[in-house]
Length: 408
Ligand SMILES: Cc1cc2nc3c(=O)[nH]c(=O)nc-3n(C[C@H](O)[C@H](O)[C@H](O)COP(=O)(O)OP(=O)(O)OC[C@H]3O[C@@H](n4cnc5c(N)ncnc54)[C@H](O)[C@@H]3O)c2cc1C
Image (cartoon, rainbow, N blue to C red):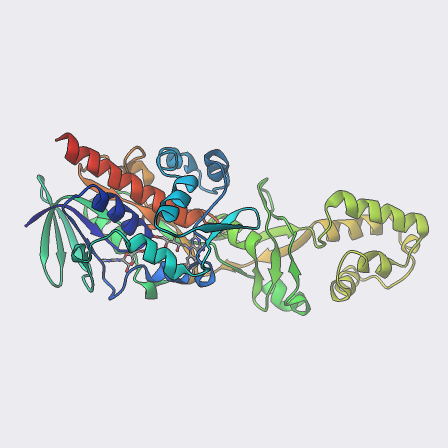
């Protein structure tokens, strides 16, 4: 039997494409290798699922690390965060805003996001335990082979994800299909991951557990700021700023260790300087100045690192004052490695966007073949960006196929 569409992969991107096809009565099937759909989606946001965020399309795109971030304009304009919120609302699932950025389901359960995605999809369109092994372009149509059967289709959507968290089913198969078809791929690299540091392990281990929730992280030699907060762990650094920056750290670390820096207090720079000037005027003991802005443990550590003792602040020289301010405002940590691809929340890399038409997600050189979601070289930081990209690109591919079929 010839299908209009075969979708490979039942994660968020494949299921969103399926919704579009279903609502337009297209003859399609979705092949999922697991005995259940969207295993990764169920893990997202600590099983609460950060579905999307409240950014404008412009701000969404400008928050991405990727150089080719503007590729996503069309997909997001057609189906962006507001459309995603509306999609779930129409399926009886309200989303609630948290931290003035992230949307979570009102149920606080990722399962309800999956339930909403499945509400309109007919069971007979879903094939479980069907890992696709081969994808051939036969000129007039595509042949999709699994251990259980061979399917022919006029259109194929590859929605197999990356290599992150392979136990969920995403193990890079889509990239193998792309390479076998002669398409350009970018090797997967870890994104959204914590980082390892011998510096922390050897010299800063006593800071383990310290959270700097207002820290803004910078990578030495780069201008971009990564707000969100930093956490000292027993192996290095974690926290939202680190997860966000990790994609760029992974890029740089191939040339050697990477130094990052951040403000070690929860106060902005101008307030730290104000307090410092006040401390100098009153000639406060140096520890009182520090403990006013941070935990006792951290204040003591700063003194140790500087080789200072708790004397009055003016007993130290101007040069020492500068060292003090530098360590507070630009606390440096040397990073040696990032997490491996499999343990990162998200992977950068995948099918090169050079191969894709941004207006449709179709491979420019292979009419009828689409790649969507994390299997493409499109990814973002934490904050609902990756699910938005999966939903948005899956939706665009579905719409583009519907248009092609209707216009025929
Ligand atoms: C722990 C964790 C937490 C996360 N939290 C968030 C969050 O809160 N918000 C956010 O925006 N993002 C989050 N992400 C990222 C987000 O989950 C992914 O970016 C998103 O799931 C990608 O969707 P996808 O459809 O492209 O691929 P996937 O979700 O990886 O789905 C791919 C599907 O394809 C199937 N498949 C693979 N190969 C084959 C094959 N050969 N044949 C048939 N089927 C196949 C897989 O089994 C899988 O079901 C998180 C990721 C992780 C790991």
